[in-house]
Length: 232
Image 1: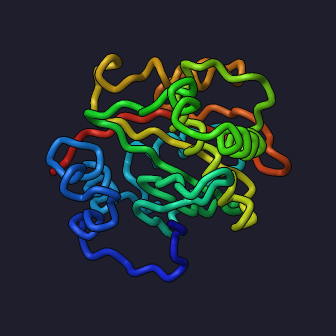
Image 2 (image 1 turned 120 degrees about the vertical axis):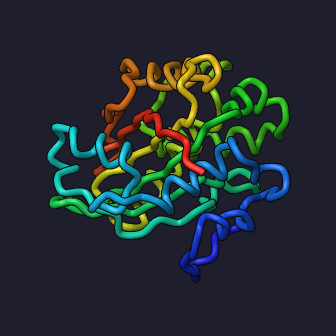
């Protein structure tokens, strides 16, 4: 299902619930959907961003992030991908403005959930044509050309592609994919999967730091992992 372009502002975190694919299953205390909603709805920084996300932009030495502030944020934002009818449903999509231009941001909240299917598992669940078409579309939008290991998590790839796809629509100069974790334990929050994803670019994952991944055409692609204290 495509994301409608007519959007209604939220009044509280509770308004995020009905946007979930399975509200009764995913809207629970201590899980990422509710924690992400609370984090963004209660953001009190001058930038309009949750504190931990604001901090990684402020501490970055990249000129593209100077003076970052939130323009708009959309919960459970769907980005259409070629090769099938199912969209990439991002926990948050945001447009940021800096002194240099616009930034496209996708956020994947994580608490008691993993990153879903590996590439090997996903390949077994879709048609050959669908797999090849979607993978080609994703690869074109994440700045990678190498063959991907079966163990890489599919979710991290299409969330990153979503940031770039929307950056193109908004004529943004940068795209960023952030994992916002609400669990400190590396084993519980599946940090190893994120490290494996960053290694695809020949880089090392560093928590609380924006990492430049690649140039995708004229768009600079970054990623980061942040920890946010759970709020209720």
